[in-house]
Length: 337
Image (cartoon, rainbow, N blue to C red; front, side):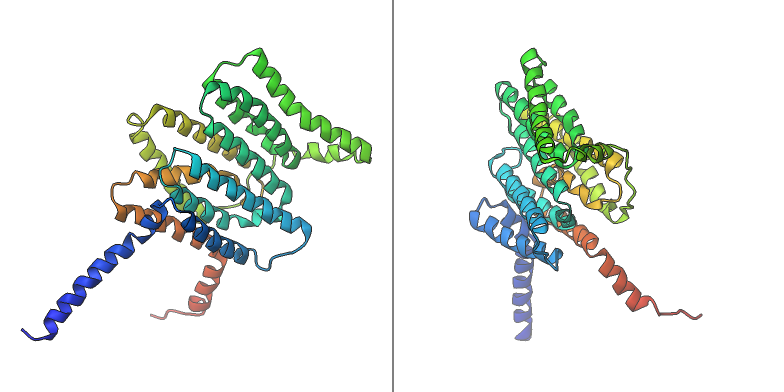
């Protein structure tokens, strides 16, 4: 045996060990409940987020849109840190931050971004509710937030389906609950009407009502089919393990599904050509996917699912650039036989 053979065996053994650790690197990082890790992910996301908006506009309208979207991301961070639905907050953050990068153009629509913030608060309050007594308080809070959201993005008022479903699912509707719902919905509307009347902008109401005209979804989303398939796989996995789940988590997952379906129907009816409105699906989608990865049997498989979603997200984000690259390389190539 030559002297080089032991060295080859030695280096190959080291390579196998290192490659195994690299393959599980992302899973180990995201599985840790570390503030430093979250800070690092946040800094990396912020850099990529600003690059996706390049050139960043500095007018007040654009800056407010960016700040509201980042505030929504903070709400998601707090949810994952304090919720017991997902054991590893890093998984949920990974999916949600990638989702933001995919639909960051929502910041160009300030009213829709504001609505996203308020709807995320509604979602957080209902999914985090621990007992029926708390749900009675949330009925007023969520209806108030929903009315404020609808002032910015009128179709979001149809999220009332989720609010009522969540309430009926936890307890029966009584007179007190009905009054809280009506007061919560009416208060922001009455204040807004009063402000419009005093400022002489009462005619805005006509344009507001036109927002309820049907505007069916008209944007082809072929590049998002792989992402949709991943979400579908996570649902199928959830159904196969439904009976073995904790009953508390089972109820919460049902409400998350209702929220997702409710927003899907709203976007089908009113989304039009605003593809960035899919940002409204980011919160529940991140929970579906992170829960799925959490219960995958091995670390290597978890790593694969995490990177697979990242690859699909990057393909969607850089779809135009990839098409241009393809055309520049193969556009002028002719095949002769």
